[in-house]
Length: 77
Image (tube, rainbow, N blue to C red; front, top):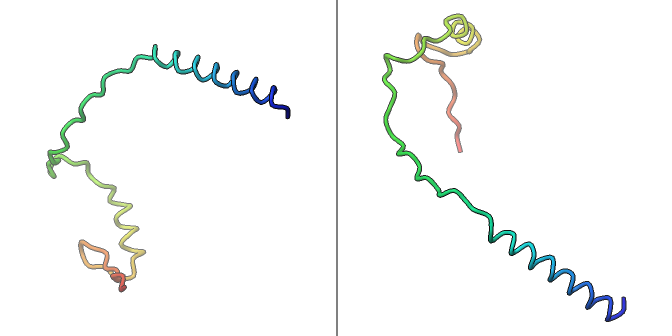
């Protein structure tokens, strides 16, 4: 490419960037809202009742379990 062509492309690129910058200046953003405080815990008695059939199948498929828990091997590092 000749020097004239390179200079022409530079000027066009600068014009495009300047035009884009002016357009961005007119963009208005909403103010950021502060996040809600994280906290609070659900009350256990107000939870949904689990699917008893699913629970039964899971305990039947588990090789080791007791009445309330499935017993699994802990990862050893």
